[in-house]
Every structure is written in structure tokens, then in C-alpha cells.
Figure 1 (cartoon, rainbow, N blue to C red):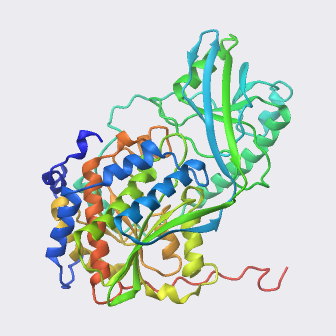
Figure 2 (figure 1 turned 180 degrees about the vertical axis):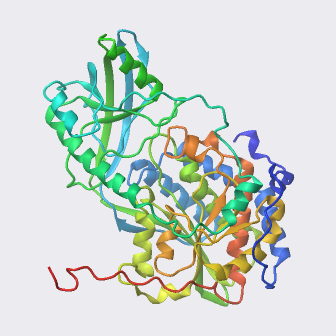
Figure 3 (figure 1 turned 90 degrees about the vertical axis):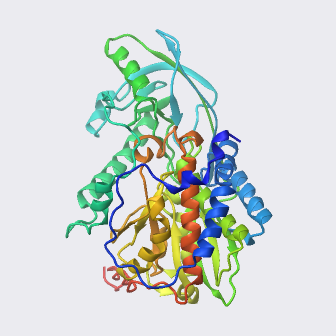
Length: 525
């Protein structure tokens, strides 16, 4: 492996950021096992395997789109690796997902008036071109149904550029950064009253989704060769997700491509000058309908006197397909696997059973963790809970990229704040000092929180997550920060150890109320 794996212990002991943020909660008086903390640090910093795990999940097996052959091969490797470490009960738990999909070949070229390669990627769950197709490009931006009439009857067999030209701006600020002292101080404060889900944004999303369904239907009827969109990124960064559905019964969609904005704009500007442009695409996409189940990967370290109680940690294993899913979320998966390895190899004694879960289907809506919670702990729609729910002390999640852990989102669980403030004390030298009562969305801890299990996401330095790597072709191994990954694995292992060895389960918030019955459930019309 690369030489940057050989990092000295000192690298794990400092962050080049401002002064630490003062804790807002007085730490609890519960004991800390500093001998165990030393064992965990020694194993995690002097014998780390986290970047080796990261490289296998990305360079060798990435990307890991749910139910794709790549994801299944990555899972096979992870299972064998953890079995080799001596973890217990390593297995896969199936859950219903839908058909798989993979891109097996993608070639995109401009042919005339000049020949040049194009930076572009196909969208997931969309069809290919059934071999090389050479055709004219047409610039036909469509943002409302009124645009359909303008282009009807002119698009058959064409490569259709449907996004308006967007002028990318120069970057005068770095795309990667760490949280400053002021950033963390603001984050530690409670949000302003009344700040909640943005209803206007939700409605905008639903309206856009409805329009896209009509647009796909129109373009299929027109018989286009493929649809080309401009990426919201720049500098060759292409953000790509899905253009179709894993549901085998979903309506068909046309071949869809997302192109680097600089290349997209060159083609569109040439067409605006009334100069024809010819493109060639060879897109080979495969659908996998034989097995419509996906699975989560589970492994355990057995407890001792409290073995019937559980502390869980997890991260989502799946990714999008244009990069290798390095920061989203091989980073989290590698950290959690490494935390389990550290706990096993360091020899610390665990009272509660520690259970790792690596989720699939997260990118499609936290589907894997939701299925697991429904099977084991309860139904958030009815709040009918199972006996296992009462035995889980906490669930810890990592899913914000490669950045160093700086604290914890408390997810409204103020009772746990003094405990976590105490647990953070051995990691002040690593820059971990911040607790915030705030919630954070979009990660698998929400599935646990929904049924009353304390679920927590760690606060991480942003690095280049939103600006460069999240859901993009640049989500590659080389964007991952080895020092941060080592720190994160040590911190997670220590928090899990503390939760697994304290006398009591972690305090819980009041159970969420069951959703109100709908009109149909009440017997009305």
C-alpha cells in the first residue's frame, strides 16, 4: 500500500485548527477506564488497518451500488475479512429492495466539428445505447411542460441537451476546509425556535419530480438517442445519482447522461452558433432482476455479564456509481470495521454485546437500516415495539465523509450530554470537544431514533465533502484523509467501549408518538 499509511502516533494527536470550543455541559462523574483508552489508542494509531480496508472497498471493489455485482463482491470480501479477525456471528441479513443495475461500458466522444473526449457518466437505473451510437446533438433546454410543444417532432434519434447553459464561477475560496472555533461554537448552540423542515423546498422537490416523470415520457415518445444534463459541479467534477427506479414495474426511462459543465457548455455554445455537432456514445448498462433482495452485513463482539444488551455501530456500505464511494461511505464503513478490529485486537473487555451493521440501500432512502429496525426493534408507523428494542443502549453512525470527528449531534437527547462530555475528555487533544442538541438528517441513525433507540451521528470536519466528493466522480480513495480516519476509528471504538461497559443503558428521550391515523384508517372516506 502507499507510504502515507505509515503515520506516526503524533499525527493522531493534533488538529491544525483554532482553540477548542468550551463544553456547554458539565461532564458527568462516571469513571473512565484510561487503561482501556490507552489500549485502544495504541492499537488504532500504531497498528491501523483503516486505509487498507478503505482501499479494498474502493480501489478493488468500488463502486458499491445497492444490488450491483460490485456491491455483492465487496460484501463477500468484508464478511471474510471480519471472520478472519475473529468477529462472531458475521452474516448477511436480506431485505426486499428491487432490481440491481451496473454500468459495464461508457464511452463519450465529440466527433465533429472537432473530435475530443467528453467527461460524462450515465445515470443509475437507466438503459444504455445498445452499442455505439453516432448522432447529432440538439440544444433543447426544457424546464416546463410548455417547452414540449416547442421541440415536439424534432428530437428523434438525437442527443438532447436539456439543461440551460450555466456559467461556472472561479473558486476564490478553498473547496476543502475544517471547522473553525467559531463554526463549532455556532454549531453547539441550539437552533433558532421555529427552524424546522422547509415546506417550500419539499414542495419544490415534489414538483420537480412530477415534471421529470412527464419529461421522461415526452422524450421516450420522441425517440431520443439519449438525454444529456449539465452537472452542477465544475472543474471536471460530475455529480451523478439515479435517473430510473429499482422497481421492475416502474415506467421506462430514456438513456440519461450527466456531463461536466465545461464540456456541456462547449457543445451548447457551438450549437447556438448554428454549427452542427455530432457525438458518439457507447453505453452498456445491465439490469439484474434475478434476486430482488439486498442485504445488510452484521458482525458482533460478544459481551460478558450484560451480553443480552447491545451497543450498535454502523455506516452505509452502498454508494453511487460514478466514483468509488470513497468518502460516501467507504470512509464510514472502514472506520466502523476498524473500530471493531481495534476492540477485538486491543483485548479490552466488553460487558454488553457490540454489534456492527453495514447498511445497503441508504442512498435510496435509508432503506437497509429501516428494514433492519422494522425486523428487530419495531414499526415507527405504529410504534409497536419488539422486546429487542429495550435491550439496545445506543446506535453510533458515521456518514459525513473523511473529516475528523469533532463532537456529536445529540439528536435532542439532552440527558446524554453530560455523559458524552465525560467520554470526550480523553480526546480533547484530537479536537473533539463539541456537543450540540441539534438534529442532523439524512443518515441511518434516524431509523433508530424513529423507534426510541438513542441514535447518534458524529460531527465531522467537512473537508471537501459537499464541494467535491459527495455523490460525484471525484469520490475516490485519494480524497480520503488517513490521519482523520485513524482518529475516527479510535474515537468510535472508545465511545462504543464506554457504552458497552457502563453500569446502565444510556438515557432515552420519550418515545416518539405514533403517527395519527389517516382518514382511511379511521373508517372515513
